[in-house]
Image (cartoon, rainbow, N blue to C red):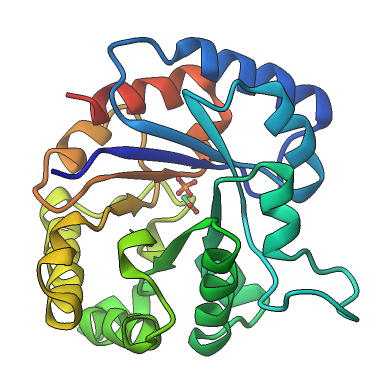
Length: 250
Ligand code: PGA
């Protein structure tokens, strides 16, 4: 049985005061009725405030990217060891904005996931097709190629990876994949994992991300292979985010 998981991705938003206010409101909103695990990925500079500002039991903190290197002359980079030392639990790897704007490709992303696991961080590995790729009928091909390097790498412990399907055309656009469209891709992803890792695939959490909000969350989260959400915009609003966590707990 897979435990539902809802993770917020604040992207490059917030401030020091907002970090403590918003995390406080979110943590207070996580009552006994919420059975999903809950996380928030904040910008690097707010991580220290975030991890000290929450109890770390109901709500765990994550980063939005990580270096593939352990240490050394990589100006501006942050290593997995540094994030772990700070008390981070998760790290996003391969978010479409990293792939698109920072030209991070599948090979380097796998190295980032390996670096994360070596420091006991749990990578949330994101994949998703663009609108053009979907229109061209290439969705499955794109997802398969984005996942190939991860699934074929012997250094990756698939039992400690969370996957996130985030159709690029649905991110921050207000357009969401229909529950059926999303489920189709999630089932495809689980099948790919099954081909490599057998029954372990049944335990891998696969999150949906892309304009998930309190109105559409329930129908998405009811799908068999959708185990939670990766939430951008709605994670900046405590009430909306908590409402999604409640829907993931039904
Ligand atoms: P969104 O972002 O919920 O604002 O669409 C999701 C994400 O980019 O992780």
